[in-house]
Image (cartoon, rainbow, N blue to C red):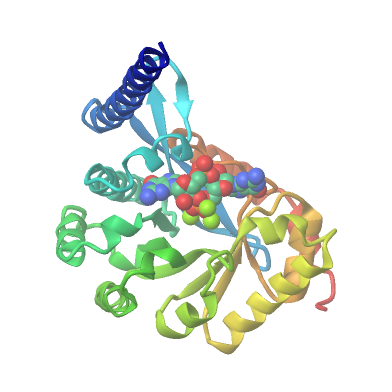
Length: 292
Ligand code: C2E
Ligand code: MG
Ligand code: MG
Ligand code: MG
């Protein structure tokens, strides 16, 4: 009797595991088909130079216009494919779409840098630079210095020398780099020393709490100081209020991004939004505060 129960349980477990594998497989296929089925789109979130009172860039953020679930964020589907080559198809789609968008914005006389997030697996490909060069060549009106790539510190985890090489090759083309979510990796300091990143992007978790948590404030201030002493640029993400902006400016960080300036928005809303923003005086008021 006990034996039968045991065997039944075993079967039950197998079926369950099988089901899980199948579901995972289905989800991966669904994401792969989203690329082919033209269901992906990019939202854009502005980057503001508070001192100049000007929008200086746009970060492209991936969305999936799912046939039944509506607009889905990247954290809900990128993890399913980030260890497969689907992430490369997606990454190349994002690069093309962002460059195409930048090309069409050029008619409106904008001089933004467009930032694209690149997954570690994509970035570390041996032919990354070659293929990126080919993609750039499809958009002859967009100079490469208008493209910035955002990579996570953890992208360099496996082979820092290789990643450094890719960064230098891209920079030779004119492309710049930001280290995204800076400070959250466990070896930020050695990456800072060895990777030629142009910009450090202070992680939003530090920024969000810096007005209520002194440790976070010190952390933000230290990253700004690091960027300055290493001759790198610095931008803060997750800026949700004017107070955050004012504090950052006093600490010496003029570049900000966050819901306080704008949430990520569809491409067709961007030009109208920017037109309205120029007249908003509120961020210039923060500039008037004395530095700390
Ligand atoms: P990230 O690059 O660090 O982007 C910042 C995320 O925080 C975005 O979420 C953005 O919508 C959100 N955010 C911006 N400002 C604020 C704020 O003030 N408050 C709060 N609470 N959140 C804010 P999103 O769009 O869901 O993207 C999440 C992550 O997915 C990104 O983090 C990036 O790592 C990844 N991702 C997005 N698009 C792509 C892509 O095209 N390719 C790859 N490989 N990864 C992408
Ligand atoms: Mg990013
Ligand atoms: Mg980030
Ligand atoms: Mg992030």
